[in-house]
Image: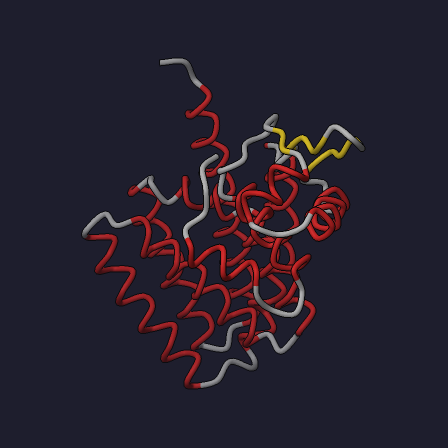
Length: 230
């Protein structure tokens, strides 16, 4: 897998919780596709790569197993499970319902500053959509949803939905390569923002739920396309 740069080594070697830092590094490597389903690694290999002892690596791997991202066999190592297509569909179905709830709540509570921030995001989305720049669009899409999660006023919704977005970040990144979908995303975001500005809770919930369903279908199509031969 290759060695880490010096600054990454320092990031992992410092701080209060090595286990937490190792877990975050391994989790991101799995979710971003550096480790793919079926890949395996051992405690000693990861410890050497990150410049830490085996103990925090062992603890991080156990946490990854609890998350369902790896299967661990003592004295042999961990095999990556990753996220299956079914996992992503399940997350999409759950997101459809609870992001709709978040939008409904946000419609009655969103602040002028948050509305202004959403308007600014849409301006940037329009710019980067015109330039077919997927990376900035993914970050802007994430921020658009985060503001709505925060405006809902529920810490539990915010934490849960942010976690789901993190878990499917690679799938969302692949999905954003479809510029036709990027254009539709911009239109859907504009409609959601209008509903929030109008404080129309029913419309905000309906539009957000449809937006998530559309995004999930596009993710599934993109993943299926990647598996087609040739």
